[in-house]
Length: 178
Image 1 (cartoon, rainbow, N blue to C red):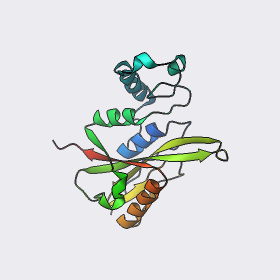
Image 2 (image 1 turned 135 degrees about the vertical axis):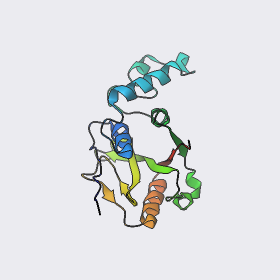
Image 3 (image 1 turned 135 degrees about the horizontal axis):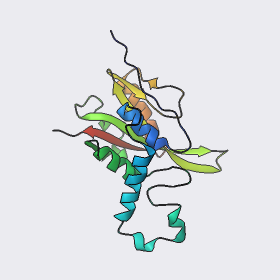
């Protein structure tokens, strides 16, 4: 049996969305910082609320923080749609039991998890990718030193329920039907 090499980018600055997307798609530079910046800039141009911006909006753009590298969910959705993926926000009221992990169209799961650092002084959110590779689900979190396999689907669902209970969001990434 051939062992497939799992691609895993590690966290650098706050580019967790960039790392999570590349980990999800299992390809180095599937997305680049330049490409995500361009998506964020395009979303700004199309933003119907631009007139209400303040001078700080130049730095803390609505879809991308130029100082830290943080990107928002709109960049995630637009980026994945450009790769013929569909993103569906999971209704957390249903819990993880409603997620069909073995569904034909499910490509992976993107998580947006609340995090606290520096003794709780800094609060933010972190993007994480989960994906089934060779029939095994992996946590591809860029903060981990290596991909972490789940032993069974029930373990994945328990992990997802824990993410939901901590205020995290689940976004199901589906392959478009051709």
